[in-house]
Amino acid sequence: MTGADTAVLPRRIGSRAARHEFLAERAERIYDEITDGYRKRLFLDEIVYTVAERWPGLAPTREEIAEERARRQGDKEGLEVDQGILLSHLLADQRAGTHLLESQLRPSELARRLLPEFQARGEVQLETVHLERWDGIGYLTIANHEFLNAEDDRLGRDMEAAIDLVLLDDEIEVGVVRGGVMMHERYAGKRVFSAGINLTHLYHGQISFVNFVLGREVGYLNKIFRGLLLDEEPVEKPWIAAVDSFAIGGGLQLLLVFDHVIACDDSYVSLPALREGIIPGMANLRLTRIVGARQARRLLLGGARLPAKGPDALTWCDEVVPAHQVEDSIAAAAKQLRMSAVTANRRMVRLAEEPLETFRRYAAPFALEQVQRMYSADVVASLERAWIRRRAARR
Picture 1 (cartoon, rainbow, N blue to C red):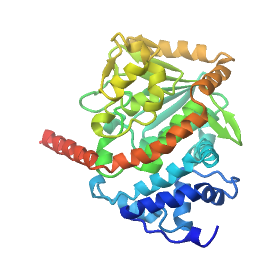
Picture 2: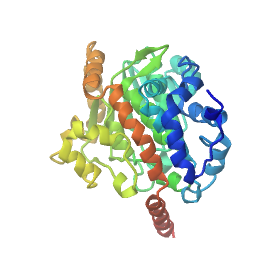
Picture 3: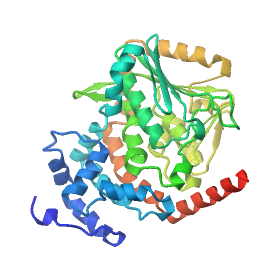
Picture 4: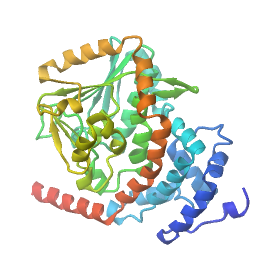
């Protein structure tokens, strides 16, 4: 690159138009350089911090983001927006964006470290996830007890590692995800699938854009949907989700990448992202083809709640059963999904419905739109109001 390409750029909000202009002309060349001519595959955090080192001012450094993370969301400078600008431009370039997305399908370092133990014992306990192998099935139980299985950076890390282990273990043919039994006073003794994004952590500035908000979409959700890229070869398996109590927000987004969804008859799904002021991940891309256009808009724009006992239940799940029958339904679905032609057929369905190019073209604007929403005045104000209500309820 020329000297002009490596010039220091001003980083504050007023210079973002210049940053867009700079990246519009150079995004693919930057990606080519940091990946050594596409020979290296980098995770998202490696990409943004490598660029920050080589082009000072183009993206925030690791130290700057660490300093930001010590503040509440409303007190931050919004440096993650600059990461969103960078990643949006990289994803918008077809060659760079495709390589970037494929690179996120590699196993995480945590999963690689845990694999020998898991293969030997058939079980591993992470902070918020328990994984065990039994009769060819990988059972992943979500156990973020304090927050009703709400998603945050810690759960995202554990989910990705557990999903990687299911895909890496040759003895596992089918993966299953179910929420664990809660200790929270409102749901003590009951299973819960997911309460969506952890708004408490978001209020306190503990939700990372790179490692969680975008990382979950191109990482573990995409691995369930497309499988791993292992030594440049794809490895994928069918997946089952069992929904107890509710799948709110990110929980419903998660269901959209599963091959078979079992709903307990007292459960429901909803997407409160509009009320929260953010974009519900890839739901805007996937919901229409799964539940239909009008139903998708009722969920996305109207905040509809769909109960498992309602007339529209089979638009979002495959079967509705009483709680005591969930395990039997999981076993029956797993038996069906272990048939030899399932993997080939799920791959062809995916190629027809959502090829990687379609995903890339959505992910590019999403990366910028979502991070801007995270720092918008209305989202920050909404988080503050919710926090005041929580404190008042505790008194």
